[in-house]
Length: 138
Image (cartoon, rainbow, N blue to C red; front, side):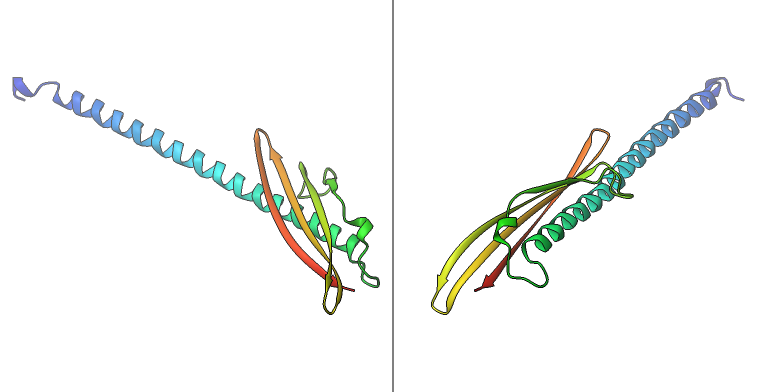
């Protein structure tokens, strides 16, 4: 061994250890961000399902299967899915706006529905909104 080369293996080893540690930390950070993204996406789908449930419930109240539109049911409704498996910590709020028109062929009622579902996971709150318009000719 030459006297000028003594200790060079120690310096190279420390350099490799530092580089490997930095790579490990970067990978850990990327995995953590990926896990947060998956949680956000799952709760986004749950919030969308809560909004859909609210919208369908509201549509059934305003447009019963065997009757004309029930204008009195065009209001705001909310529901909390506390005891529903898969939708825990989720809720919806559905609003309806009604307007009457006189057409040349008769009268018509229009309804505009907006349903927002939201789910909370710890400090993360995810919400999705759905809009639907409907019309009934009288």
